[in-house]
Length: 329
Image 1 (cartoon, rainbow, N blue to C red):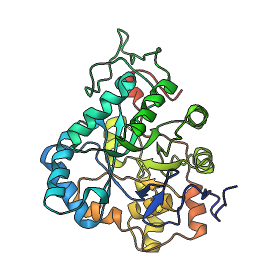
Image 2: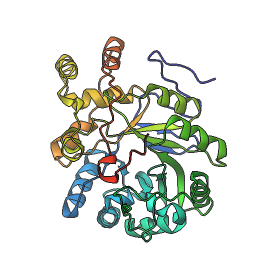
Image 3: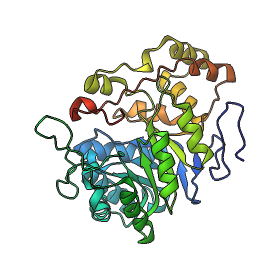
Image 4: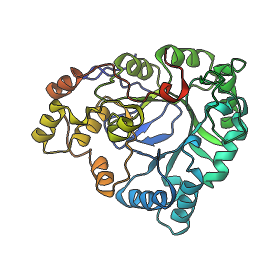
């Protein structure tokens, strides 16, 4: 039975987490608690940002084939390794299988490895629990049908996709495999059919979308939860999806004043104290440093409870706007 912390979240035996700077996954590998999300990073910005992040202390970088910047990330990593800025074994690299490559898992992973100039991945995730029309390995398109609706492939099961993920581990191409944007029941199904259990479920998670049931279920079964969009998407999701960010909420602003921290630091610390990994995205050097400085304070229980009261069950990442279908329905 997993021990329960005072905040109500489990700390499973398989997940050694003490609010430290790393988490031990269910297969024994460790993952840094704070990472940098590389969504919407392009060109020269990738190298400059990644180098600056490494110098600050970041060792966890979250990529995806869909982000269309694996080549740039790979070039930056290769230079960082060759110049001695950091060693490969000191870095934790995640990337993801796109929907259109569910029937081509091994080929897609090899394509990402080639672009990233790596021999292995620390973590490979199924980006979304849906297979769509194949458009070529690594192309990562989201083809719409004649009605403007995402062309979902009904011939490929998530179990078949997972078998391909497991093969990657056997081949030595990937150390850990996991899922992303899976619901509680989809996670349960994966646990039931898996030979190699998912090490991670990466989900949208922030004060307006707290997902307590899913987090507790994952933690109970030794699946680490990583929070993507941990700051609620801020300006980027407001522009892309028309969503509302939690960053302007007066409760969070009040807590930031109380602890003499920024709102972002309060939100990231809250997530870490729920035993989740965070991968905030930013292209601003000052924010990069700010987001990493979250280990020198702890939120009091009354303030954790206060943030808990903010939950709106509000998802800010809404691909239905572009796909013509709500895959979360």
